[in-house]
Image (cartoon, rainbow, N blue to C red):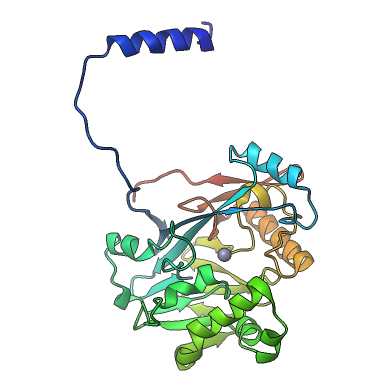
Length: 318
Ligand SMILES: [Zn+2]
């Protein structure tokens, strides 16, 4: 049977338009619905909670070792518009059955107008902020730590112990380092102090490599920031690789893992961490999650010539 040609499709559509009787009407939606997705992981349940998206214009210097046209090609291949980077935010909730652990905290509406829905989605998941026992932080960029506090400085998760990577704390809380910083990086230093300075006593620092919560093992993935940390979560025979920002937008940085974006503080070191992580994910066929992947930000990584592809998980009932 011949495929429908564009001309016959248009003709058919026009006829169909004429033929439809008037039907019911409803107002168009003005907002998306909740972003909550649960996955069973051994005896645990892991829940992806959507915080929103930030669409950032990018310039010629966005990738240190690739041209703007190569970046636009990669965006086009993913059916995305040129010259803009969509940065999606997904926070992970780990329910061990006796403990509630949050991995990173979203933006609390302090990064972009189109992000900050974590608390609404947590509510949909039936969890009160006060019920969170532990917060584990991957690194100190604002989109990962701003959700610890409101704009007014109140703690959003009042009962949670906060765990942070030791090298991340050492770098960002050092006055000498701050005195040498400029531009966005200086803003990150100030923001880290805004979040942590007066709650330092509630913050526990861990050495990446350690188990930080039951079944949650941290792993160094330095380069994006000096103490940037990824995690693996284990329960029974099941495991999940939480890549944090080792791989950001998959259509750019899984496909082109050697690209060095300007937001990786140490480009070559970040590339090494990214290749190691992607290689392990593909070789072990691990379920992966990454903070900036398209919601619900979980799936698998497969090797492909020159890089890797991301295969999103299919929606599955519980
Ligand atoms: Zn990030």
